[in-house]
Length: 269
Image (spheres, rainbow, N blue to C red):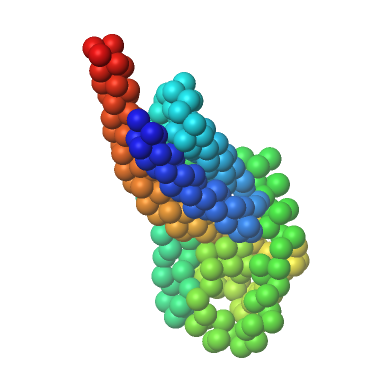
């Protein structure tokens, strides 16, 4: 029994360690400018990681100090958390499965269109109230100002690999035919009616294309890429947690069997 309890305690110590990548993924998301402005995924990930840590600590204590009810709580609670983590992994995969950049002639950067993305993500940016808050947050960053310090010549800018946010928010859409002055100042559009974004462009440095659908699309593309990176960590951790949980269940069952056998032998003698 003591050996089985030590095994259970050791397994739950591993589960405690596995909560760290989950919490770390949530913290990493919260440090990214776009996720800071939107705040959708990071808190569920952080909270789920903390809950897994708390439950694993309970299982660790229950294993080493032979507290049966705490082990039962661990087995039930960890199963629920594994199911929740699985749902989160599937959810992130499903909402990020759509959307990609579109190449433009003589441009190295890509353009982004809002209609390419999943309904869930589009609903996060289509509301005027939500977007006004996100727009204010994005425009307060150095996201676009940095481009003016990096690219002086038009051809250098056209050959650059901009982030989706920079491509969507810091310049007008290529199809509008604006003339380059610097990365955040453009004049004389050729086709002002090509897209509503052509009319929404502003040379005011707090305006730019933050009111454009291309900016919303660029934000969603950035979110998609970051969420997918975080999801890889969640998937690996989920698989490890399932393995740890299964081993823990087997160890708990063996411990109960040893306990029953010991009691039977004592009653028999």
